[in-house]
Image: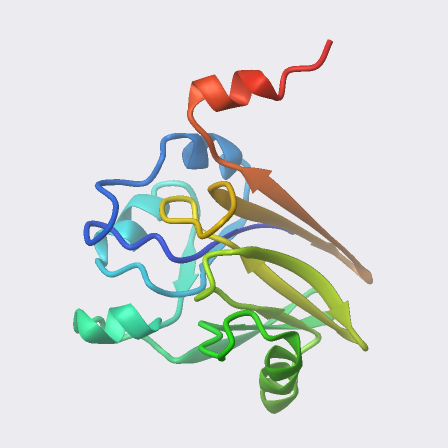
Length: 172
């Protein structure tokens, strides 16, 4: 199963719309998981044009009145996958994220909140944060692709940049 991971889009609060490259990156995914701070349900509606979307509530979603679950646990292949916004301080603290994963009883925890991407294994838990495609902090705009098949998991961070930035990465 190929899953698109996205978080912290903050539309229209901090960004006007989803970058069009997201639709290219996610074109073959089976589902999309949004780890909170959509701010507007229109983000989910746009992403659902690509694939089914599961989303949870981020701290800014509460502020804007979106009624979404605080966390979700999905059984995907042989893994329990948890999604929560990851409101820990300092942001991105992997020890606290590990404890959130243990509370949910999951093998893989997908979070957002920090606006910074993360792929890290802590003991037997895989911690993933796709970053933000619209309002990154001290990093490039990003989303993530998660491929889960039987007992294998591959996570790929995908940079979402404007065409000029993409040309800088060209290699012959």
